[in-house]
Image (cartoon, rainbow, N blue to C red; front, top):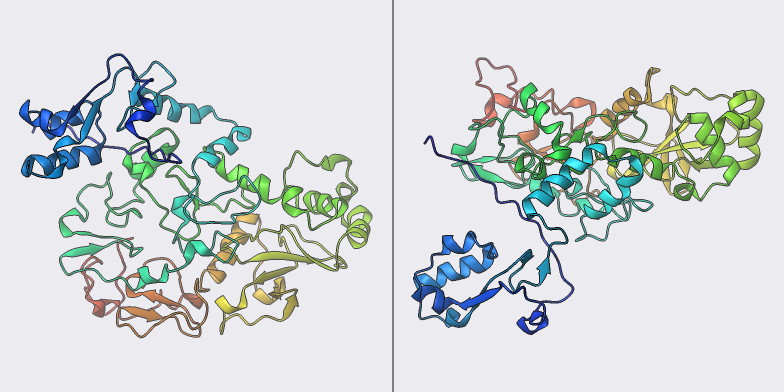
Length: 478
């Protein structure tokens, strides 16, 4: 085993507008490019493994392996290209722009992220958008990261299509000889459970201790690491923000000063509070809210703004004159894809620690346990004091407190959940159903933490929890 070396095959995909043909590239082949049929390769005793070493596409290597097992098939005339120079592809139709290996290009690109500035973040984000859903993630260049699909919160404001059908993951059971990843998206062999703390097999990392100091140290530099531990990692906690590179920021990006090394959080924050992202407000109203809330932006010089003189002296008259009677700021949800901050133009007092006058939400997702007292347009709202929150010293603590309330809301409309299945738990006084694997796991999914106060977890017969030594609740490994 001394010469054993673990290898990772990392896919990088191109999606051409049309499929190439051999005639498309006949004039552009490198002088060292040659091609063979499957039959010619077989007669020369070329193995499938040897094709891997000349960078033949994996799917073509698999076809050749099938052909070797059954040489009488119609695959005998299938052509395999050995590309010359820096050309690659099943027909050598692509070429690297630089005179260096693809591996070096990848490594240099990832290393360059460490020195990337915020203004370069748009380029990075545009290159890491999940394009298979028509998602409105908010004002451009905001876009959907694949890790935000089925993550327990709405990221697409056009109907939350990133969570459509995701409730089926909660209903997904696994066979007895497998381990069910915590998010329900994967079932892995039992032998892979807790076998390598630095290489989780579940995308959410729930088969290993991903909160160890060593693991968190490794993933903290994922911005310059192209390996599976970063690229194939999703965020496991609802309140985490995906930095788009495997790093999961525990602080809420909307108002927090914490940031992603990829600049994705700063880019989103700047876009959410930008003038273009809040075009429903007049300039005077928008700029007043920017300076009042002390949101950092290059678009407004708050030192010279009326609001800098204070609430009663400068801001109150301007907001009363320039803003609608009730308005959202920002226009984008501040969390979970349906929770907004709202204000009235005639408020007589503003507490920056409070951050908002009303909080508005989709009532159908929070039915039974969070009845609204105010309507602002189509949104159901509560006043700040009606949430019975204390005064917080910083905005991030406030957002955490709000998340603890609103994460109990469902991600499917009332009536679409079927809680009758035996492996589901129905959150009392709501329409939300969760997998019983989420009971007593350290994350409150139900209102008033009723799923975390469940006292019969020892009877769930889930072997991957801590061993039951008494009738008290037993916690999940997460």
